[in-house]
Image 1 (cartoon, one colour):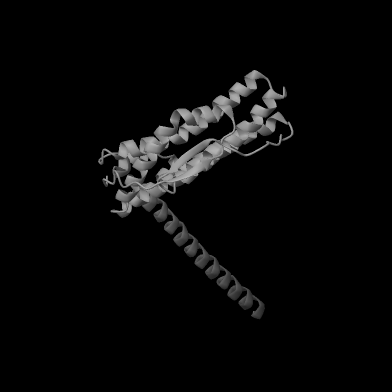
Image 2 (image 1 turned 90 degrees about the horizontal axis):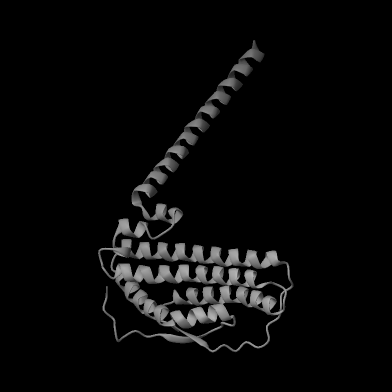
Length: 229
């Protein structure tokens, strides 16, 4: 990948974390996330050299965005099932910060804050005696697993692609790193097959319409001749 070590610029942004479980997770993984962000910047610069690399990176970001949203939605469903009223948080100060080396890291930041917002509610319900230890621990583990899944994808892509013949730079390796739905978009043969089927269906539809029109025209003509007779 492009060697831009020593030239990485980043912006420090405040990260709004209030729950204990997400705060502890971020403290343990802050260095790992920061390093992955710098590697991702290098990777994105290298990907600009070829359209296929650039296209795969965009697909990966799209896939990761979908998975992240699904994770937050599942956590929200668990919170809604508890059926308790939302508890208002007092104050908004947070001692956490994140180094943003690439715009995509804003998505990571948003994910962390979204999962933390759900965990804040569950933690407040726990300390208020509205939920028991089991539910709190279950929700805490679920939130950490959801967050770790995305962070691990982030780190894995950068580490695998550093080998240059793997990760983003290998069609076969890359396809194993994304979901089936997005994988079909990344495979030229599959995409061509889908387009061919679409074209064939459109062509068949066109022929059918022509036959229907011809049949209707013939029927109208026969009806006129019958009336004339």
